[in-house]
Amino acid sequence: MIASHGVPRGVRMSILTVLLAATVAQAVDFQLIFWRKGLDRQFTFDVLYKDAYEAAVARSERPIYLEDGQWGPAYMDAYWYATVEGRPLSEFIRLPDGTRPPPGAIVLSSNSDCQNCDVIQKSGAYELYRAK
Image 1 (cartoon, rainbow, N blue to C red):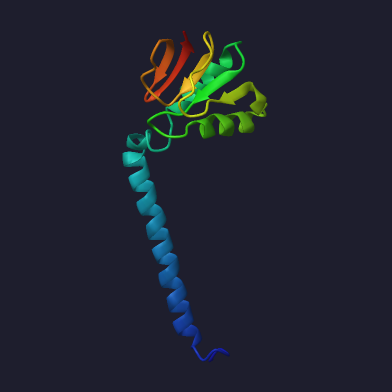
Image 2 (cartoon, rainbow, N blue to C red):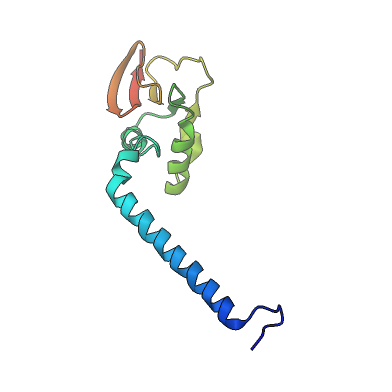
């Protein structure tokens, strides 16, 4: 039987079978690589940020200042986790580049080497600290 597009049904089924087999092969390949090398990509996906974020929100001090540093605009991670948790974004203040937090403030930073501060927790390239 010939389809209205002029391609025989057998050819279409063969193409569909090849595409499905390629899709399954890609899924298997992805899973094998993911489980073998997935933990090596923690830095790429900001996995270590969550620990510093959880330490910050567990404290009573508010607001939590967010400082972007050499590792990029990590404030987005705080906004993401806060949104997922239903936490008001008003608990956070993003510091403009080059701005220092007020003395005594709690700061969640992607700078990884704060100056004139007391480090509360370090998680990879991220730090939670109290500004002096």
